[in-house]
Length: 102
Image (cartoon, rainbow, N blue to C red; front, side, top):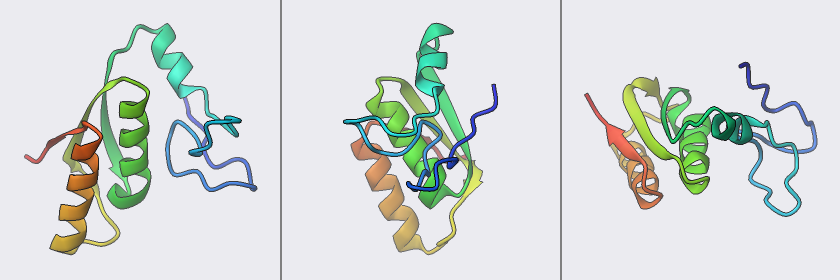
């Protein structure tokens, strides 16, 4: 499946699940429904950029009830400072995302 995100010029879409609008759900990608129909319960997240698309996708997956593991060696942030990376990790952990660092 190819997920086309960011196709609606009216909204910013970092997450592979679609923009963060829940009511009404604007420009959703259909990824959540596709994963559920396939019986998927856990997802692994990698990609670019860690501090934008990867973070938002992982958080949305967790909010949707999937078990989420983020492979840090499979991503890279725009802001590589220790403070920024630590902040991303804290935000992900608050949402229940497991971070694998090696």
